[in-house]
Every structure is written in structure tokens, then in C-alpha cells.
Length: 592
Image 1 (tube, rainbow, N blue to C red):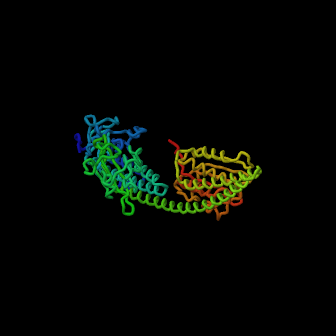
Image 2 (spheres, one colour):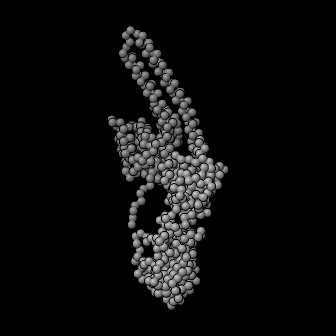
Image 3 (cartoon, rainbow, N blue to C red):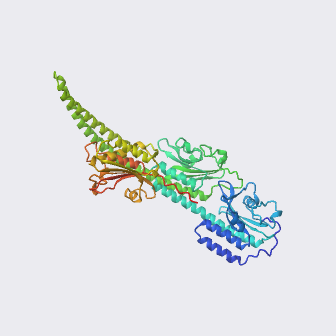
């Protein structure tokens, strides 16, 4: 410890400090709120050292400075600012900045004669500051105590502060472990909620950005067609190059990890023999630390997750990756591998089911078109006989023309149903105002002259959702037309709102996600309970028009969006179909 003549002083006689330290340790161990635990440590330091003010400055890795976040004492309570007070470490700003830069404890008996001291509180005369290090030996905070008496602190006070710093270190390490645990839980939730690979990877990248606080992170996956490892998700300057850049096996450090299936942690990546400096989130010379772990599925490496940290403006900030970071990122990679396998297995199953449906669809459409073609041939033959007559009856020709028009229209309906069924899951999503889309669609489909009343109940707070407006328009049109077909008079109600928890559960969708609901309710005969699921299967229709694919197409469109469709009406009182689409969460109110 460096000091400026600190003699024993009558102003500092810690009383029963051992008991006090034990009491602090016990209280902090039980305290579940880490912020309150740090406040408790700072407050007890104040009492045990007979100080006027005590403070804890915590390292902000992103800003490369210390922030005074916790404190106790009269002046501290008066000082409390809206934003944290920062301490510049590079300039060794004051005693706190000096300790953060050097990692050594420091004390002075008279700050007025100390060249390092920078005044923050007018009453301060003596000061003592000690570093708080994590289990990897990195400076994470500085604990300091201040007195209004000259030469106030003794070796006992130093010991107390250093012991308190160790307790602070335990709390900060606990916070780091809790953050890691929260990240793994969030990634696990992403596995449950994601409907596609891109959605899963996007959620994982957000966890890396917000919780793990990696300055840049990328996910690279194997393309089985090109046998290259393609960038699929990224946080950093590569975001606009997703899908456009790729590594060959063993090309650069990233290609090496993908090919070998082994992790790589580098403090000086530029010196590694595999380093090529390709496709980086920061320029190569700005990379201070590199970490990449393999994503393995069924014993094969299918890609990697890579994180990098750039050289800090603060020369005293140790931003190297640790073995804990490596283990954490590997755990995330293992979860990603599991999620990808689940999604790909589901997609394979859906493709198999859809191919089977297409086979049946092809056979049925071929049969139905064949019947229409047979009828067309009959009309053409009849027309041939008529034109051979010297004076064919105009009424007979018109009848044949009407029949021809009808058969051609039926064939067009069959072909359109076929196209809609095949392309139902091919989406081009945009941010779309759902209420406006439903309002316009209902206006287009609903007949001008009818005994049925149309009632719109649109909750504008739903706002925009990410969807393919063309496909949603097709789905809503189908439901409205279907309702009109079964309703004789009465009311047709079209609603847009937020899906209730009960509706989400009935649709067998993830309860933790938020959904918007488009519902169409009629006053027709309704649907028996034992038919509510069967009506969404292909070729299940009581309508003469089309092939019986309408509700199956609606189901395909809804599920392709990550939602679903369900019928909740009561037989005898009318049908009620609801399309559920993933929605944004309600904006949080900004309270004070």
C-alpha cells in the first residue's frame, strides 16, 4: 500500500471488527438482490472504519471507466446524481482512478497535500482506497473510505477495507454467474419459441448483445450444398453481410474451428498461425481478444459461434476472454445445436407431410380437372353439331357458351386452390398494420347487397405485425367467404385484437409469446365438436365451390407465420374462426 504518513490515530478504533465482518458476510450471503448487497457492504464499511463517506466505483467495460454506483454517508446522500459519476482510469483520475489503474491499495492522511487526490466531497481529509478483483484477477471495482479527520486511518482500517473488497468481489462474481445463467435460460426460451432457423439465431444473437455483453458476435453455419461455412447471424458491422460471406474449411481461425470442432481462445489473435483477418466485426488490428466455439450436431461440426473484443481506449482495462466465457459460449452453442436439430427435424416432417398432401392433391385435382375437361369436350362436340346447321338457334349457342364459361371457371378455381396450397408457406414478410389490412380485405370481400350485417371490431393498439400481407389477405378472405356461405341473414363480426391466454392455449401455441388474433364470427349453424380439427384437413368441405382446400390453406398460412388457426364457436350458435399471429409485446410504460 502506498501512503502519506499514516500514524495510529485516536479517531479510528474499529470496535469488534471481526464480529462486524462476520455479520456482513452472513447478511450478504442471504441477500438475493445484489445491488442491495453492495449497498450493505458499503454501509458497513462506513461503520467499521468510522468514516464520514464510503463509495464503490464499478468498472464499466463498454465505456472503459469506473462509475460511482454505491455509497453511504451524509455527503453521499446529498451528492446522489441522476447519472453515475465517472472516473477516468487512463488519466489515473484521482485516488480511485489510480487504484483502478495500478491494482494497488492507496491511502493518504491529508488529501490537501496529496498530488493524486481529486476533490469530490469538500469534507474529505483522509482517504483510503482498495481494488476489488474478480476470480480471474481483473480489476472490477474500487472501494474507498473518506474521513473528515487528518491521519484518520490505520492498518486495521486497511485490513477492513480489503476484507470488504473481497466480499464485494464475491457479490460481483455472483452477479456475473447470474448473468450467465440468465443468458442460458433466455437461449433455452428461444429454442421453445423460435419457429425457424433465422428466428432462433436472431434471438441467440440478441442474448449475446444484451446479456452476455459481447462487443461483437457472429454465428456461422455449414451450407451442405456449397460445403462452406456461411455467416447466418451477427452483431456488429457484419450485419448487412449475413448470407453473403463464407469460410472454407480451415480458412482462418473461424474455418479452423468449424472444421476441427475444437474451441479457440486467443488473447493475441493476430499472432496465431491460422489468423487471416477475414470477414471480421472490427478491423484486424483493433481485435484484442478472440473466442470461437464449435456447434456440433450428432457428432458432426455444423458451424461455430464467434465473439471478439476490440482494443480498448483504456490501457488498464483487461477485456480478455476467460475460461468461464469459453464454457458459457460452448453451453450456448450446444443449445443452438439442439434448437437447430429440432427445427430441422420439424421442417423435414412438415415437408414429408406436405409432399404426401401434394400427392393426394395432384391425384384429386387431376380427377376433378379430368371431369371438367370431359364436360368441355361434350360442349365442344355439341357446338360442332350446331355450327353444321344452316340456321343454329342462338339460344342453344348461348347455353353452350354459358356451360363453357362455367367449366373454365371451375378449372381456374381448381388451379388457383392448387397454387395457393403449394405456396401458402412461402412468405415475404413486412411490417404491416393488421387492422388496416383486415378492414380493407373485409370491404373487398363483403357483398354490397346482402341481408347480412358486417360488424368490425378492430383494436388499433395491436399496431404492426411482421407478416406477408398477401397471404394474410388470402386467409381472411377465405374465412369471410366461408362465413357468408353458411350464414342466412344475421351478423358477421370481424375482430382484430390481442389473443387471450386461453385462446393461445387452445391453439397449442407457446404461452410465453404474444399473439394478435383475427377472428371471423358468423350466426350460421356452427361446427360440431368432433369436426373442429378435421375441417382444417385438405379436401374437407361442405361447399360446392373449389376443392375443399380453403381452410387447409388458412392453416398453412397461419402456421408459416409461427401462429395457428382455431375454431371456437358453439354448434347451433355459429362458427368462430381465429387466426393467431406472433405480435410485438406491449410497450412498457415509462414510469418514474
